[in-house]
Length: 117
Image 1 (tube, rainbow, N blue to C red):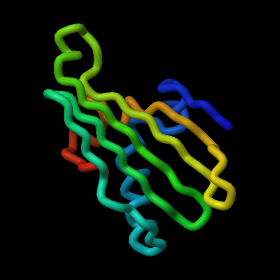
Image 2: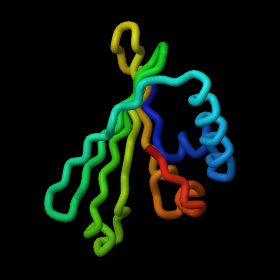
Image 3: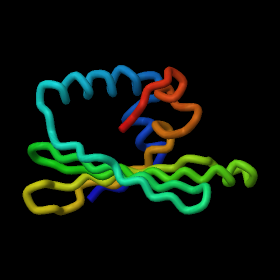
């Protein structure tokens, strides 16, 4: 199994290319549709956890994002997230990756108002 840190994800997915990569993935998705159920939304006080699974032919993945507004007062990111990719044939985890540059307020996707789901 591969564990990818923020800096490793950024090297593999440079911020200046994120929007074009996501747009290409969405176009591919239109042709090779998978299953993307409604995301799970858990709320406790002002904090939110979002769980977003998706299944394709050979893999399934789950994106987990936490939104903690009070973190900003402590100089911590308000949004953090990670993605787990599993082999669909045997369920084995293939990769776990941090995804801060995609979910952060400074990401290219947030600057253009791109909605990730």
